[in-house]
Length: 341
Image (tube, rainbow, N blue to C red):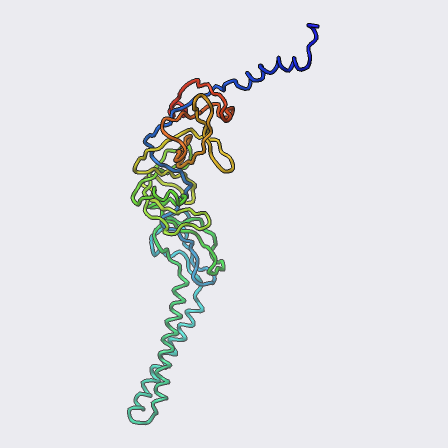
């Protein structure tokens, strides 16, 4: 009779063990939330830009009769780079000059006849108008001849030659590029919410890759209008030292000139979901989940702007094992510096 137990008796023997297992405390580490001096910073993607850049294209189509492109060389402003065949325009110019010479002589004769009444005013005015028209034609032809000569618009370094002598070119043909590398610019974009970090004359750090030494650049201007598609603000800086290749990708780090008081927590302590961000606090030995709002972010930390008060015990390890109102056992209290190391 003692060996036989009912099903209800067996369930009673198991019940206390299940209850004890469900109340077993989760071992966690915590940090005490406190305000500290934080310097706001942000890292942005940037592009190296030459201080001056142009694609050298002829202003008029034709066959190239002269080409002077010293690839990779430095040329002065006004240097003749290329010349297009201008034989047709020169012939037209000579023809107009000959017609003008005849028209001037005709006008002189008609003026004498007009003075003695041997000619009506209308015929004389037509002769004068012919002179003006020919002079206009000459001016136009001379302008076309000037367009056949391509000169360097500024001093700089010439890129690679794209055409050969004798090639037929038009206004869309790129002969080469010309860049001024004396003052390298770095353009980058940042979200408009960080516009307070942009101060004209403020210095930023520019880095080409993770292993390269950062160089300084000075903010010179910002685009007044925010880019509507991305809601980003475009910023331009001047590189203070070193030389980078135009078009290169760089990282730009901005820091605020002033520090502010903020509560920082490790980013891995924040539990994100579809609607809210949560932290786990230790209150009366149990887990308390609170909704928080975050602000600036650093490499491993995030600023908590709402939902957390100084002195709160924030769970920083064992977060995933905690359940609302479940018992917690604090193993140690850590600082933010210890968690980042």
